Length: 595
Image (cartoon, rainbow, N blue to C red; front, side, top):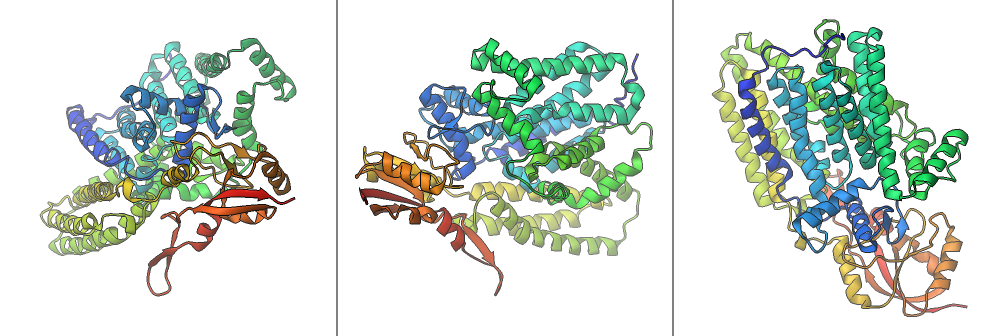
């Protein structure tokens, strides 16, 4: 029989779990669900919504498209989730709330999974702190409120680890099959990177017990789980594609010869976006040390405790009963992503909950040490002064950071909420600290957490009304009014941004080949348009239309996010003229073609 290496502490506090769940429920609702439909969709969010909309319009639930062009950047389940929400609530069209809801729901559930997972190994107080650290970290707050597949994938990642660690001691193949099934589903949300839980499980197993843990029984179980993951992944592909024999034959040829020509187009694009990107990246060629910065960005301001947390973990790994997976989880993924050729900061997202747990464990260690020390009156006064400075800095610095990261700028926020709330937070923090008992550090952490929650809620309440903002949806609505029923085409040259409005018929794109040269693109535009047609293009590509006679009908107003901060005479927000010149859109009407 294998050793049960899941060791629970005696102080797990089961009587406080109800209280902890209520706290997470209230904070999660306030942080993630308040005003999720008020901010205009960012460009990447609109892409998610447009792909889902075109799937429904074309009744093609297999091949993602934008304006008719195939867009296999992500698998299909994240788009299906958006359409599922739309059908459940009975909406006639997609809007900001529907497009963001799957991500927001996943973000809301993630702290509960972290709490449950941590409670398998550590005190429930550490689990609560871990969840609150995740909830109140400004980058996690931001990414949890925008439409993407990242938080959906992270939710399934945590579910997989919880299933395994909860039932690992039972040595039953059923739980491994359930793990494999969930991995297969996750691969259809984020890609083949959904199999990362197996790497974490294997690394933790070897590190916590040693190579002796790789018994025949364990190898059989993990093989069964991997087989179930493959069966679920490809089984869903067979169901989606509907051509089992040709798909199996294409997979066989690919495994034997390395040629993907026999694979169906959707599966071939997924392989290109997942396997080939690891060795020969198409983009995202950042240096490996980007992942040394990512944990500090994701978990700011709590990341100030991360260096101490890593030192604490390293010091404790020699203690035999310290077999929690969180340190190995963090470092195994950090090393894995650093070795990949394609690198981007958000790839490290599956490792962030582990870093949050390490930080929470370190904070509780500091609290326990502080409770054993006598605190003099002078040190308490000094603490009040330091904490006042801390709150002042948070009001003016952290608040600004959250605002900018959330895709807003101060001109678009209701400052009537912002500054009074900062003063209130300062006063509340000072009062609570003054009346605190000898548990000074515990009081500081509690008030600090409350302040962060208060600040995030304030930002949520200050978000502008969508009707008062210029968005790409409003621009395309104006395009419809200007063009009537006339033909509108997109002139997409180079790395141009895709244009969509979630209400318009999909625009045909010219050139049809995204790799076409500028000369070929202009020739195709001349060939496929007639006088009276309308052309949408980016301002920077206007010079290419010298062979056409046209009139300017509409020019997009500069995006409010195209701003930067100048520091010549103090911080001042000014328009980013370079981005405006390159990225703003223009609507032209063709008068005639020069011959």
